[in-house]
Amino acid sequence: MPFLIDNFALFRDAFLTTLSLSLLAGLLAFVLGTVLAALRVSPVAPLRGLATFYVEVFRNTPLTVVFFFMIFGLPQIDFVVGFFTGAVLSVGLYTAAFVCEAVRSGINAVSPGQAEAARAIGLTFGQSLREVVLPQAFRTVVPPLGNVWIAMVKNTSIAAGFSVSELSSLLPRLVNANAGDLLFVLLGVVVGYMVITLPSAYAVHSLERRVAILR
Amino acid sequence: MSAPVLFDVPGPKARARARIGTAIGALVVAGIIAFVLVRLGRNGQLDPQRWAVLFDPNSGVPQALGEALLATLRVAVVGMVLATVAGLLLAVGRLSDRAWIRAVSSTYIEFFRAIPLLVVIFALYFVLPSFGVELSAFTALTGGLVLYNSAVFAEIFRAGILSVDRGQREAAFGLGMRKSQVMTLVLLPQAIRRMLPVLIAQLVVLLKDTSLGFIIGYFELLRQARSLVEFFTPTFGNQYTFQIYVAAGLMYIIVNLLLSWLARYAERWSRRNKKAAATAEVELPADLQMGGGGGVLPPK
Image 1 (cartoon, each protein chain N blue to C red):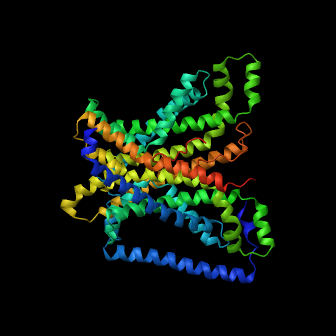
Image 2: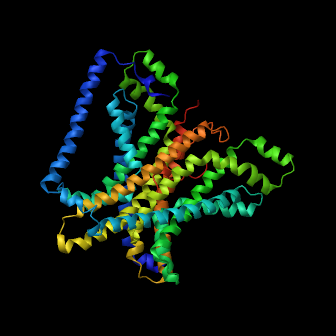
Image 3: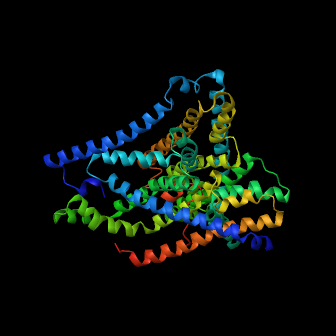
């Protein structure tokens, strides 16, 4: 335990890095993912194709490969992004594909009568999506989106392999500590993730209860 | 809800607008592609001779990448087999009549779904040695994958077993079968058939997660690509770096795409197949598809 207190600053910085990485990547993923979901149901076939292609590619690419290209590949075409920026972009672009999948399943869950009614009173595609379908879709996708967020927080751990000093990277860094201390480091890392994921889970649950619609 | 409900069948004006939109979109995409190609071309990355190294057996690159692909698949296959078996046992354990078996199985499942997969692998690779248990990178990676994926498989199997109509179970008991017979002869075969598409989809995730081996230095595709580049740099500089990276990344994506198509095929099969009788659409939740540990919400 004294070991943890001695290294408190290290843990705090690592935790804050994980937190800020998650928040920035989450914002990017949420915005891009929603746009992609709208594209996937749009009337313009090539836009649908574009979004489908994006999702299909990222769904079948390991996040480590995305990181790999961001950090080692881009410099080969004279783009150098910092490690932290690279991590935000990698996690954000990757997660956007799954946000899109979650939102799309939500759009599919809205009953067709809603969309038909919206069309019948003369709303355009954009209006019916904005005013009628998406508000309902977001309510049903609160739990899956919450799960995507939690999975994303866990996925930020991959940044440890690409020189970002976030929570998981503490284990290889402090590997020379003695056995008992290392166990506390492991405990600290696990607790660090739970400090983010558990409150998120409860927030998602209360949000879900508040916005749930009975069908 | 199918997409066409959201808009009318486009008339001439809408079609014209769609064409303009398409043209602009195509221009933007083409612009991005052209920009990347110009950048690549200016650095001489498109030089055919640079790409030839990937197919030239004398350079040793194809062999090295092939070996790395095998190393990746080895982890995936061993992980799949062990995780499936352990997942079956855990699922049956979670549905057991004995409270303590249920408690042990659910604690295991909840625990390994709550922490990032990479932390499990790090714990095996960095923490265990200080207690005198040295694991190779292969064992640590496979072990981590099995510990996490068995928890996910257990949940999939459990959902499958619970989705079998109650009458099946009651009829089996009515015929005088024992508990173990009901499970192995009646419930599991139906559950597995029904959950086959989801199981294969989770195998894609497992295969994706083998790339975590890169971080602990297991020689899968990415680590092999790095070491090839480091080997070439003293003699050739950066000449082949980009090509080798692209090859390694593409190999991952192609193998995953093949497995994804298999999953889709299995889904179509199970929908047609009367024995599988998957009435509801079975799909792996988006957070599990992300790999790396998925998301868990505590029960309500």
